[in-house]
Length: 453
Ligand code: FCB
Image (cartoon, rainbow, N blue to C red; front, side, top):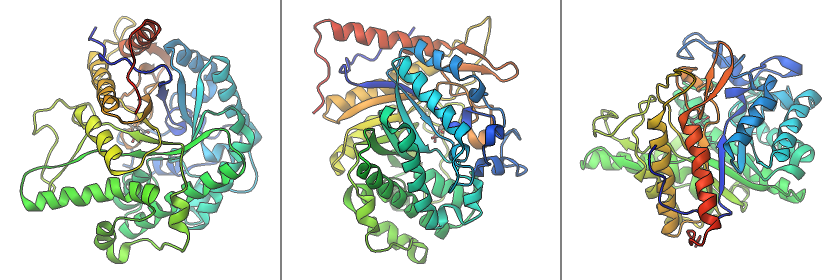
């Protein structure tokens, strides 16, 4: 067993595990659920590496109690999950689906009964297909549909939630979904992607304002995928490219959320592809939040000619081909804290895919344990330097449907045998559970925890 991170985290620091609806629930057509853009995308030949879909996934919809017991067995404080919008509102507007709502009610009540705080995400990418047919996130009408959805979920569950996240990773939805086209809905237009990013941010801000006006008790925020963007070489062209990538990945989201403006440099780069912004939009986007969530997996390395390849630097790679680079998490957190005025921060996702093998009822995933321990230490380092961290969540509770990569990439603390749906705690799950226990023991003794500045 590797050594725990040396840091002693404060008692109020929230430890969790995360999942998302489309990746685990399955039950794609059960109990009145409507199709999402990911259901439709999976039907396109070649879209998903192994030709799979979310039809069954981890069958979590039918195994809720068993999975809630797994969460409880880990001893975490919090569980971050998402709601499938088309499960609760099949058309994305109008009628609500009572059976879908009941599922999330059982989920939230089941967490509370086990002493686990529910962290709900409204949009982890599975937009109702019916809304896509009316223009999807490129249409300004979807903004109001999202606010109505947020209010509906809050009316039903808000009194029992610790936190509501509006969107997960708007950069991914905009850029991979609408510019690169390798994620749903599979469009390839830079102008559309820019407009989508604006509508996601606007719907976030308007939803936060509307939820506050309702007196929402849950803390409100958004989750961004951010990373330090390094330059591949010292050449001017690579440096300039890294600066632009940082603009498009980090400042394009951070500046409107925390400064009320898009970065000029990126607006100039987009030129005629820049989004249409109406008066009042930027003020709405900058509505004060209670937390900011960050998903961190690796650094980015930019080269002007696209020639840089992971592995060149000699760093270990995960099964996704992503560099293992924990120092980048400390670097990112310090930079965010330096350049913007931040609410409390959470790492809402961090984890790694490796080629796990189930042998004799065990999965000896020591690489994942080392990855997690190093990244938790990186969070502790940032806290020791004054970054206001509130929590950390592992991606993911279960092996699951890894989007365009299908089921081959395993991120879980818990192994899933898809043929039998049998769950097995990997060594990383046992380590995380024991690490949390050891933290609590140390907190109870006289040691002084990290102080949050
Ligand atoms: C993030 C997603 C999450 C998961 C991880 C590996 O971008 O938010 O759903 O797929 O990557």
